[in-house]
Length: 277
Image (cartoon, rainbow, N blue to C red):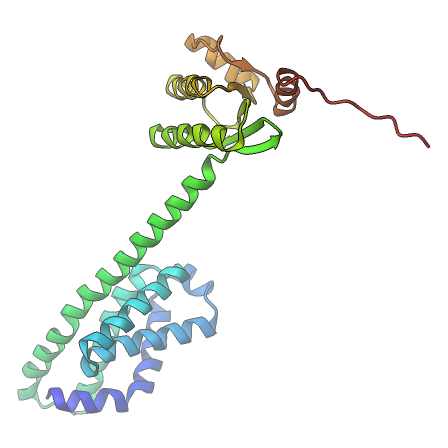
């Protein structure tokens, strides 16, 4: 029976694929299907069916290579895991039903066919899910690292003056990253004044203020001054109501005012030039 399947399935691959794509499109998530171009859908579906069939025909090494490549492809495309799990069940059912409809399997052979089907599909189901989740976790991990690196940059804006713009919520993990970037950036850029811009931070509570004060203290220990800029009226009111002491830190309402103060600290100032006609 297995030998029969090895000959039957490749010979009917095109019609199996056509039926599979129609079924998946019919039963699939419309929001997902509608945003995928027909060309991408057909090529990815063909690759999926090829991977599944290679479980029967290829060596383990070739099959594993195809499986990993396919998992990476659909993760990059942002395709959901349900596409794989539902698609696998649908494919098996199509092949099974097709054999029965065409009378290729006699009643006494159905049990044997079902056993081959289970031995083929069940391990592959687990293998595909494992490959998908491994690829997804690795992708998310890399994205998280990239976002962390971009979430707290120290930008030199003038000689001896650097700015760290903060956007979004500050938790303990991010506060640690801010501290590391601040200290390494001060040394790298030889900054004398560092401006922490919290314009894009939605909430400043006791914990956030504590992290900022710690960062300012650490900057002072490496020989630079720290300024806190972008303090909106509601943030100022919150800081006062919480009784947070920022007396050791120079504060301003805007980044522009902060840069002007930083220039004063470094014995410089912005001068407007008159342009003669």
